[in-house]
Amino acid sequence: MPNIILRDLVKKYSRTNTAVSHLDLAIEKNSFVTLLGPSGCGKTTTLRMIAGLEQPTSGTILIDGKTVFSSEEGINIPPEKRGIGFIFQNYALWPQMTVYKNISFGLENRKWKPSRIRERVTELLKMMQLEGYENRYPAELSGGQQQRVAIARTLAADPKILLMDEPLSNLDAKLRMEMRMDLKNLHAKAKTTIVYVTHDQLEAMTLSSRIALLKDGILQQYGTPSEIYSEPANLFAANFVGSPSNNLISFTGDNVNLDEIALSRDEMQLLFTPVSGGAAIMNGQKLVIGIRPEDICLLAHGPLAGKIYSTLPSGMETIICVTIGKVKLNCVQFGRMDYHIGQTCTVDFKNEDAFPLFDAETGDRIA
Ligand code: ATP
Image 1: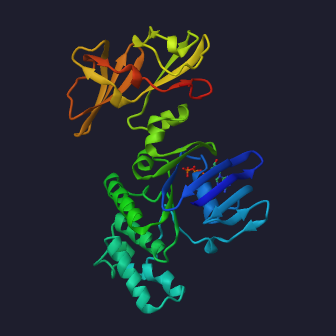
Image 2: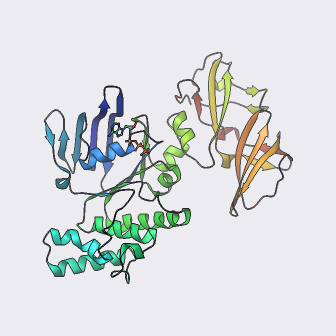
Image 3: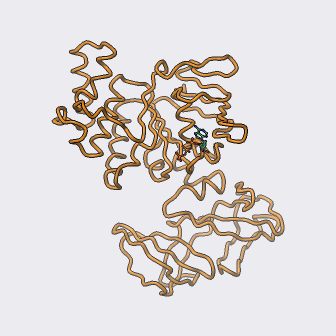
């Protein structure tokens, strides 16, 4: 049974400002669901509505089968009665309290027995790898340690749901990577449903059991990271997810049936032989096809001649941008590759990897 259900949820800040539009989402118990999308797409608003910190304009929210908000029935359960923990971007620890006190404070307020508090705090210090730091003050900790204290503090009362709004955005790249590992490990151990907000697609891809991809307050796709990566629902999803970015190549359809198409575009000199799917496309219809960078190979003697535009070697892999005619293609090769800019090269890809196909104007997926 899903832990959180959002039904036809709408949030309008004003008549012309709709932050969330008719959102339907079912979040399974113990899953890690990420709300992903560009700035202003309604992620934080959705999270705050689940928490009860923002009142929806209309719709229904159920938590563990219980209605916590319903515009029709006039139900609006306050945040503290929803059994939810919330971690914000600036995880504001209490500076005058030690690590131990930061974690235990909420439990003391809830009148837990001192022995039970000690047991719980010790357990959390261990889980978050903070043993030995209990007497330090927040100012004496690194960013990542402060982050872990904030998580421990939120987990202390054992919330069944943990909401996190861009919790890693203040950390440097190395620490962010470590914290992703910690978060995933924590999620496996703590058996909590996590709803996580980020605009960082890599973070969403690496952490989530499912991703809800939003644009302009509208849900674009809800699926596992690999579904979203390999079966993007529309052009927006194909473009937003993936690093290096998907190669999205524009062309104009001049055949009627995809099965019969041999798309030979002059400007790119690429040959697409039959694209399967059988969907009808119109003469002159503007289309976009996606080819993932890892599906493009640089070869000594390939069929498509191009030039090296730029390379980004990172040690483990090299991202290479090749120009073929007017088209730029990103490809990624394992290991360090030393090409120089302007060097001629050849590339190839399998026809079945030139997929999926979108209508350029509507962004809808055709095949
Ligand atoms: P970001 O990644 O930048 O934090 P977001 O996806 O979390 O963005 P929201 O903060 O949910 O987006 O905002 C969604 C839309 O609602 C935006 O257009 C924003 O300007 C608007 N909005 C958010 N909060 C308010 C508010 N209190 N009053 C009016 N408009 C708001």
